[in-house]
Amino acid sequence: MISQYLQNFAADCSVRYFFGIPSWDRYLIEAGRIKENAATGACEMVSAFEWKTAPGTTSDLTFILLGILDILLRLAGIVAVAFIIYGGIQYITSDGAPDATKDAQQTIINALVGLVISMLATATVSFIGTAVAK
Image 1: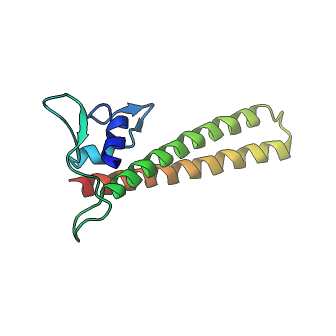
Image 2: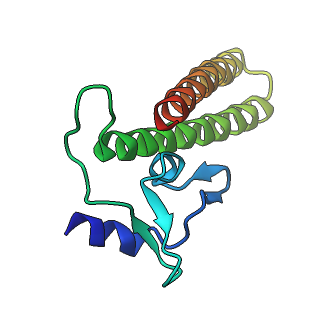
Image 3: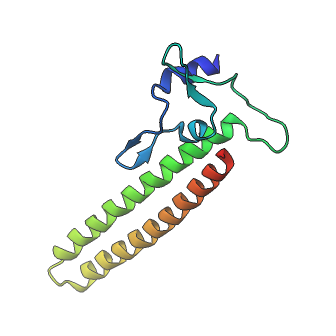
């Protein structure tokens, strides 16, 4: 049942990106759990969905959760960039008022820290997901 559900949402058997955000099934594709059926051309699970696996192997649920975490971290990076822009607008419109300038600078600094954390976390999750999928 879950395999059929996943087939409906995994239309193309290659990793797709939308504004730099990968598809949720990225690591399932990289692990070879989703492949194109040669007869029908449809993207299908290789076998039934695996909730639990033997020690030393990775379940399909883990791959899906890594994909979703990757998406959320990339979205956090986009939000951080938006806050940098917002802080810049605050800084420009502060008219030299010390409190407004300080608030704008703090917004930019906080957004930059968030962006760095998001980038490092995204790189870490991507590294782990790719290593586990191979």
